[in-house]
Length: 147
Image 1 (tube, rainbow, N blue to C red):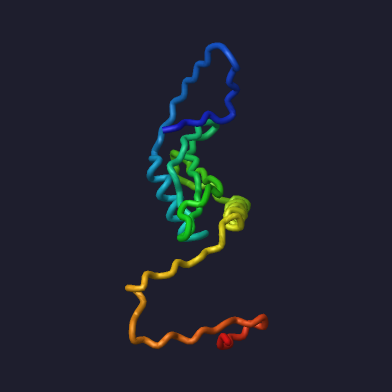
Image 2: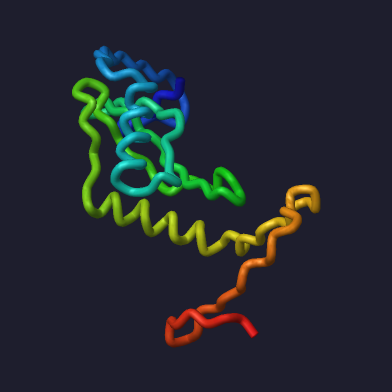
């Protein structure tokens, strides 16, 4: 487990003494699952939560990294973090935080290559079935048979 010391001045050299007594009522896994469920319910089922880091400072929280994935590439990158209070389990989520996560997800999506479906193996192509008609969407959003 990683612990991040927030707002603590650390000397470049010499002795560093740290004495912290922290009561953790919410486990790292509980925090991760809470963020994971919230992401799927509130933002996107393509986002998930990774293993958090304990942040000890004025208050103690689990900092949970948020990632986005796509069917064609899998795990595509980290889009932000959400803090979960280690005592109360309360998540720190604001409209600005949500907007930042969504903005970062869009930036990652822009960098991905276009999805290209694979051609199925011949044994999976049905026989004795007439091919379906192919349609195209025109510039004025009309559906027309492909010529």
